[in-house]
Picture (cartoon, rainbow, N blue to C red):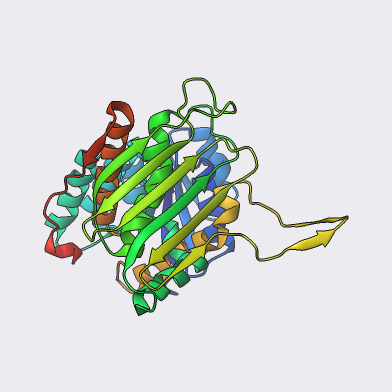
Length: 339
């Protein structure tokens, strides 16, 4: 770090998410600067680097990690590239913020977990940004007071206006429901033990061969049920909601009614069009918390264990989607490193 303690960050991946993180570190948070960007597309990396003073463009993550002005790594590349970058960062003992998924499957996530366990301390925070959203944090705090009693059920809705052209039916689970997987585990403080995925008649708005929507049911080791409506071609916007049903009451977040207008004989509000807009503040808070903790020599937030557990649950979900029925979730014994 510099004499002023500014964290030099290498951002790996300069697509939509990576470029937004470059902007965020430069404009929205304090205590960090982007000192390197990495992308296999050399021209794109150069274009992003050119907008940041003192930033160097690389095509190889390992080269960026050995640069003198790199103190930490933010991984925002595609999921299949995460494992290699994570293992390299751990070899260099660098702190990491890794966008979800940690890795695309449980086996590769377990390899990362074992590498961090051998290191003997946490170095990786996984980017489950909903844990930093004001509404979700308020819901978590309420549940922890015990005022509502024991959680019995959690209802989740996750809707996108339209899916990207490369989206597959499996990705509704592995890329989208991955968030509800973490939300369920975090809010309830319970592990998911089984997954059942039901297949409604696909919407006429869904591309051919895309099973959209889907209805997912999680069972937990605490006896709660959590369901997820995932609908990625709803047509009207991006909408994420959660309602917990407890023994003595319920609580719901995500209605998006911060402002309601009345005009021309109608009342209503606006609906965000994508996750970057809906969770902008959560992303800012997440990256700021990571930078602050890293400068203190600490690692906080979602762990590699959380990333591994989410990968295992999603793997079971994809199997249920394709084979039908209830699929148990198999996890290794939780290492002491992760509490």
